[in-house]
Amino acid sequence: MRDWAESLDDHFALMMKVSGMLRAYFDPAVTLIAHALVHEHKVLICGNGGSACDAAHLAAELVVRFVNDRRPWPAIALTDPAILTAAGNDYGYQYVFKRQVEAYGLPGDVLIAISTSGKSRNVLEAIATAKARGLGTLGLSGSNPLGCDVDIAVPSLTTARIQEMHILCGHLIVEELERRLPP
Image (cartoon, rainbow, N blue to C red):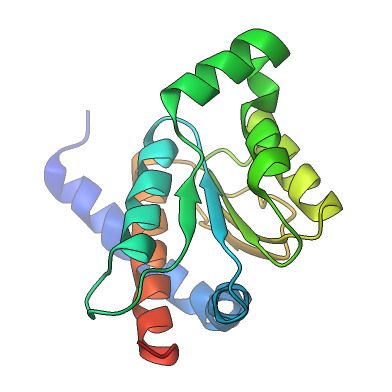
């Protein structure tokens, strides 16, 4: 088993790769979300397990605030346990996010889809539904891009490192939104 210092070294090495990659994808990601928010649209966010927690975390940063005291931005984490379990029971787990995109998603909204593997069927179903309904899509994944309008695919196969980069990217995006958009 690796020790903490090796894991920390892996984190820093991956962070440097992501830093270079973000130079191409960061502005399009921020612009996609900023455009939706400026036009009074909302952000839907989905993911499984740790990514569900990241979805809730990022929704809180958008609705409440990150650094600046500003107006709340409409964001919904598609993580409500009653909805997830009802949709899973009635329609199948692969449709738990799709069903919510159908309920909440309107043209001009944005779906942020998070999947460390890039293969989560329920996340891929949500993306397909979002695209069909006219939502913009931003994907946060590991090495397998999700096929979104903007994909930030972290070049790693290690779940913990991917999740660390996802929350870093999410924080950077919200921080930039606060810089660009009026309070």
